[in-house]
Image 1 (cartoon, rainbow, N blue to C red):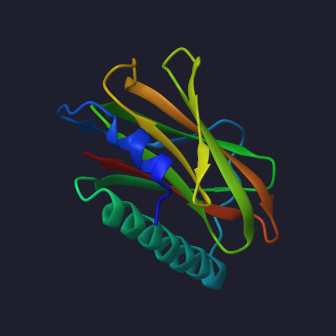
Image 2: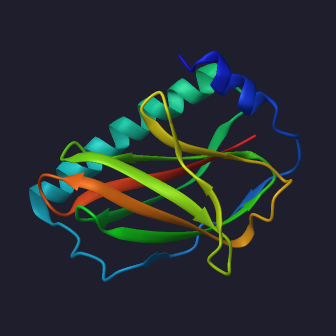
Length: 163
């Protein structure tokens, strides 16, 4: 269950039509080689389970949110990966990482690389709430940083939920 403060922050977002267009993931640094075989299967299974759990918590608390886009990437501890999005309207972006990962954070940057927002950990999940009042628009980049990884590379999944 989300904390009351979290719900109040998200409930304060202004309603407007939303368009999210995920573009190809781009690496801020050289991307690690994607895992293969059993490791890839383990990452995919872990990410799907974790993302589904978080999505269910959000929709239980705020039923008008629905997942519209997600991107999966890989990084080693300390590495960053960029995922370019077009965010319009209001919603949230959250990140999960696989079971070999000890944490992930992200920042949203505008097309010129200026920071728009940093993720805040809400109920253990790095999250950014956005609305139409900022210049999110096309070319918004989520710069994802892998904090720790016991079996490199680790996987992360960035999900956008819109109102």
